[in-house]
Length: 171
Image 1: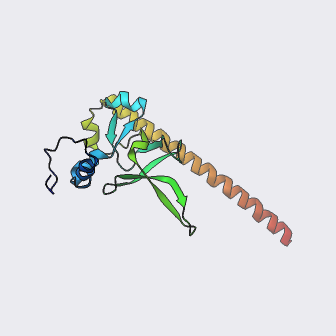
Image 2: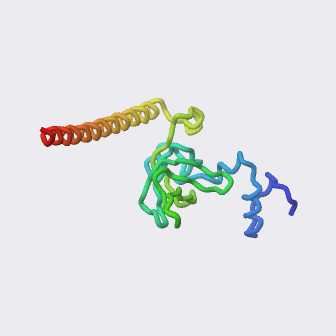
């Protein structure tokens, strides 16, 4: 077997050849190795069972120590074939927090980031589906804004009460 990566390589049962194929693959093909399975709803919508992951996608962990947790994809590492979610962290021995590198085979995509027009065109979403996705995204943003406003109001009310108690104590 030659040292260079060959596109014509089909398959082999030899594990060392499989590892070599993945290790020497060019970056434009590594993206396909980082495909993640879709949830049942998305699978029906997209017409495929897996899609290459992108930052901004929402994923759920199916197996391992962090099973059941979910988060948005923060980073995709094409050299080590790992995915990092935004709120999945662990504590190191020295006490610092670090992101956990997850294998894409342990993840399931729950929601897709559809800002890229090429991604939408590739999976041929209809105009109705595109509008529904945009409306859902806007609704989620409105809910998050309301939550943040209510949290801010709750925090300011408590601060005002504390300030009024301090003023009464000063008198």
